[in-house]
Amino acid sequence: MHAMQYELTLPADYDMGVVRDRVARVGRLLDDWDGLGLKAYLMRERGLRGSPVNQYAPFYLWNTVEGMNSFLWGGGFQRLGDDFGRPSVRQWTGLAYEEGGGPRARFAVRHRRPVPDEGLLAEVVADAVGEVRRLAAEDGALLAAAAVDTSRWELVHFSLWEHETPKADGDVFEVLHLSAPGRTRLPQGRHW
Image (cartoon, rainbow, N blue to C red):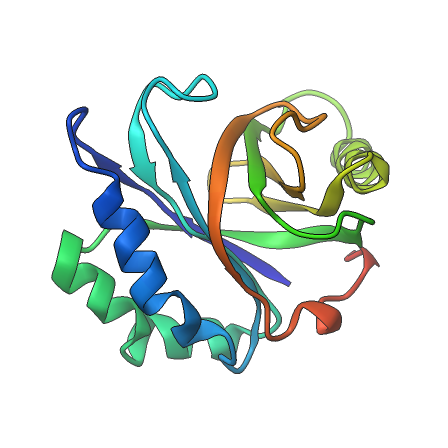
């Protein structure tokens, strides 16, 4: 599993209806993308749920590198660059994934934090895996994942929720659409 995200931070007075309309128009284009586990079309609005910014920030969990590369280099990503300019794309290697019992994704939480310089890396990863299990077991959680960027030594936890008050720390996003053609093929449990 590979995680990927880009963020488009928009002006404070930006009409976020433009983002909603765009997702309504193009969101289903990835509903059957080969190699994609899931794409959560995420948005947060300045002043809502603690957000300091207006932002469009889709989050992906990929089953295959080929699927991810096909999206980035084969035209799927080009439309976004044409509309908004090409953003930097963050990538993390998957550590763990667990399904929850929530019925549908309405909100998402993304929590990024540095991997501590001290201590054993195996303990840091074990804690991250444990947090994935805890999040997925919470009421209203649809799923949870953890991944690491070893170039920055950064952990990311990502979770999808049915309700607006998730039991997770981090940035809260509204889910505008969820494309999940390969969600059932995302490997559950620890990935190392």
